[in-house]
Length: 71
Image (tube, rainbow, N blue to C red; front, side, top):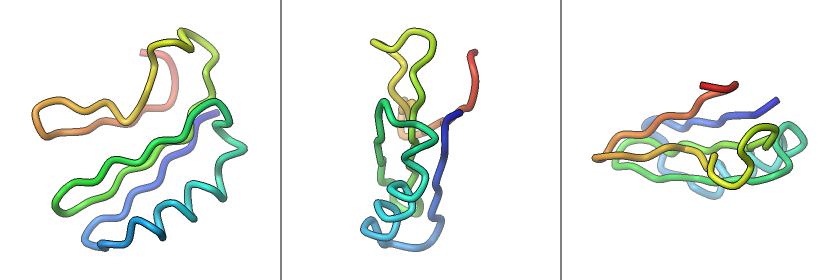
């Protein structure tokens, strides 16, 4: 099962990294953090389906999405 972190209004990427490290066991296949003007999103990915192209957070036109499960 994947894991998510989000910091809204808190500009501390090191904190987001520590939070993501704490849930890395939920998504050992890939971890990624994306920074925006007012938020930091992180995702720990468990690659069950389509391991080669399921990187998250999904970013497009200045917006981001993190999901749990197959879409």
